[in-house]
Length: 248
Image (cartoon, helix red, strand yellow):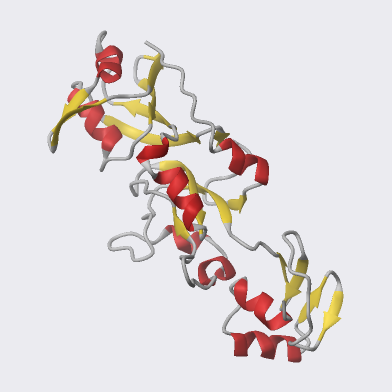
């Protein structure tokens, strides 16, 4: 791949801008200074390069984990709150879309006041596999409740509750509580405000909501709120683990 095309594919500007960066001596590849934008470079995942003093690693497709803080919308066109895209570096935000590949986008949505594990990607097949209810990828939420749980609330959530826009009961894939006002709820679908509405259906209210796991991938406490990192191949594979233990 030509060096200017490599930079373009990673979101460092238009092809013309990327060519100019190389010609100005602002790009190095694996520690070697480069000044020819048409130089052929072996574009393999893990290739390290630097652009205007910014270190970067080549990724053919972007797979990103973000620890979402409260106060951000999971939208590229936010209405009332800043977009979670502002928490990512410019190259990730600017990666070009083309063909069947979208630009980098959040996979599913968390409400602005919900925190925790959020995935982003520009791989359409990956986005579909993680977000489609047909694939039953479990998502685990830590729910802080306003009132102590009623004795039968967990069983009702496991059996299914009816939401106001759908007569078909919605069931938790797993549900447990280790404190009177804490609930760990696992879902395999993603209806609008689903956790909050399910909790309301059993006579309680959500005070705080945090997504801690998707499939076999857990959010590490070592990643601070508002920070991001690349997913590893092993972690992408773990997202396909959809076994859920039901807890009464």
